[in-house]
Image (tube, rainbow, N blue to C red; front, side, top):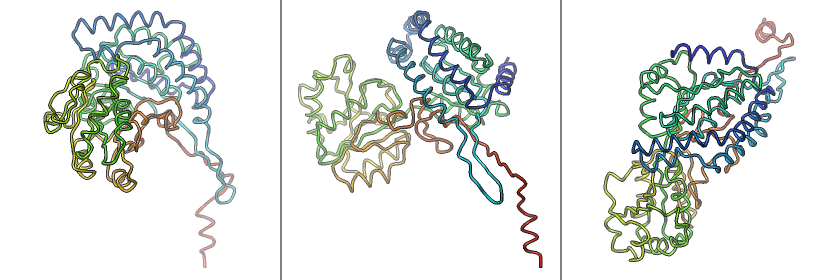
Length: 436
């Protein structure tokens, strides 16, 4: 079965038109139309998946990631509109370069090849993965978690219909419905036929893919992210940035996990947090837990305990991705202590500093190695469209080669050089010139 899947993907890849062909725009437009027309059917299937996940006791955070809403439909429509604008620019050949003699060269975009994406409980990834990867001309294998079975069954048909109606091979996207680990292990061994592996999900999923496969990875895993609050920083600004970095989508990869607060401003930070929380919409603060270092408990305003559950920070909370509305707070002596903690426990995803001091900011940015370092802003600013990379973002990579940071349409392309020689030679002319 695995051979059949891969052979179908390779055949589709070879028969697909070149990057930049109008059929890819037609596919994206068809997909937008199909999603709008069949959203009630998708929503019904997704509700059954969410109900089954609840019955299986998968937990509120998993069910929340699994559940689709009308906001997701609007997001996907905006994503497709953005890609329709972006694709003609990204897929265009490079400008010609006139070299020696009459030679003219230019860089030509090409698909990477067969892309395997493995993900867990986010059904929007099925659409995003197919849209971005196929628009770059790639054949795409999508393996979501078993909790997405009903939703992905409908999305599979939506994607195939959108492909065929655009004149593209139906097998350019295959949504895999075999959730046996044996098939996954077999796919991961096929570095001879699969060109790129993109795992999106928990650190355990990423680690499994790293250890079980020789396929080159674009790592879109989670992040253990920190915010250092420096001496002299405005506590109200700091609290605003902390809450924006944590409360919406607390399981997102840019979510804040731990505040490293300079011990000289810890009391002011906790007081500002107590004042600000009542103004936050209740839905965003539901289930909020504060894990405070034991030395901070004496500084907690009495009212804060009524607004959130206050607990004691444990040693195993360092380097932990909570994936829920749990925020850790640890005091540090200064920026050097914060840098040391991040170097030891961070995952190289998104780190931030709130400080009025230019020298401290510069030291932090030079010393902290992450895909993004945010200065006096929310960690949620680490986002492809937000930082000007276009609207079609597939993941945020913490790897170092090929792409680091937001993975966009451009990152799912490779390039070759087209050289028009026009009779130009290189070595024979040189040999004649050097002859005595």
